[in-house]
Image (cartoon, rainbow, N blue to C red; front, side, top):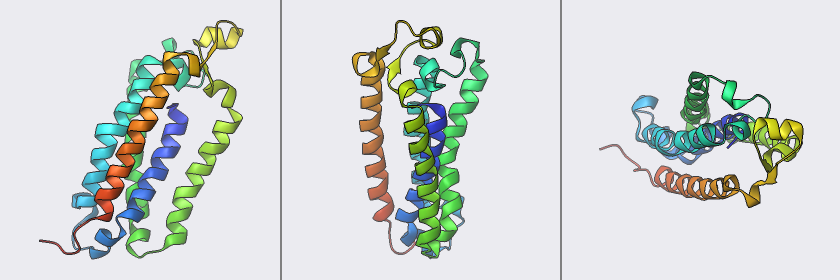
Length: 184
């Protein structure tokens, strides 16, 4: 997933997870960062979201940067920082939405889900040509040698990643919804 879109989707996912965990969060007798729900969200971010985003940054860097900069000129430390930031935005979105979810303030949580999602959708529409091709930075800028992602390994990677992330979101959602009603 391109890094700018991954960041927006991560915030939206975190807020969605907070709403799903509202029953457990309402118990409120444990600090947020040591709650079971936060640990589930952190596990999702560390074990699934960050590696998925990191794959595209490492192996399809020009696409991950939306052909805006030549990936070969981007220091690897910047790649690492961007991937870690995208991963950290999932629990950050959860932490920002948790107080509203705890009090069942759906309009506020929905705003935290919809705003980044809508912004990501607008970016995707505006940048659909960049999202739909597989190429190097030079090929994209020179308009030669590009191919639709459906015909490239990038397209298969996007499809597999979307399926894995969807399964991970469903699994985390199930864990967060079936939280114990009382603390042991």
